[in-house]
Image 1: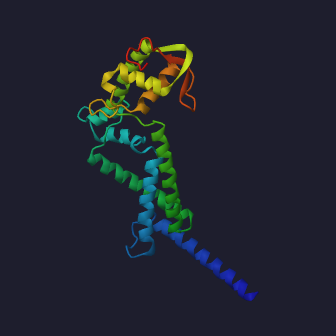
Image 2 (image 1 turned 180 degrees about the horizontal axis):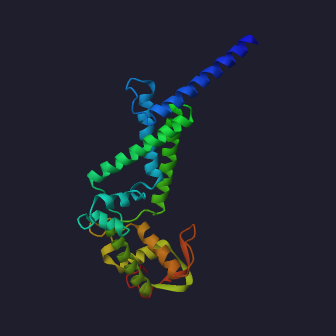
Image 3 (image 1 turned 60 degrees about the horizontal axis):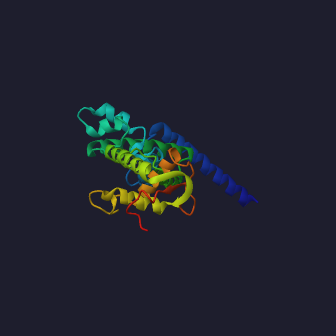
Length: 254
């Protein structure tokens, strides 16, 4: 009983001492700038700050995060920087190395602040901060993949102009080759008919005009919602309420 009481008192004493040391560190060195490279926490602090910086980068949208464009407008002139002009108009513009370095420094600083905040909340346990940062990176990366899959990222100007052209070409094709309000057809029928109608897209792997089937399907889905039958594609790939006009498609297989 006495041994158990002494053990509890010793643990409580150690806990109080650690809390007092953490409070003292918070007052004297909140960002951990005075840590010795030989100290136990130095490596954990560097890893934690870097990991938190990466987590913040993913969580805020990576290349589309809200910090990029306002900061770029402070440092650069859009009249001299095409990438910045594109970003101000809602397109994606590739960042120059000089600005990428500045942006990295900003996020590393934010990572340091967040790492130290978690460190002090955990009563000076740097391992807890690093573990939470690692979990946050995984969550942020999954979120980022989801945004990419859902095409929530802003396209480049060239990508946007290509999408506009493709939709215009598909709309022209649909007006002459698709009949709305009858039967049903499989997506492969529409894709094949579109390629026959536009010879430049016959080869999906063409170096000059590459166009994958999935891109045509995406445009078909959009067109059908806006101008076709309004039905979504079935799990088997069929669209109800639209058919390919075989009579108008002279090159359709008979």
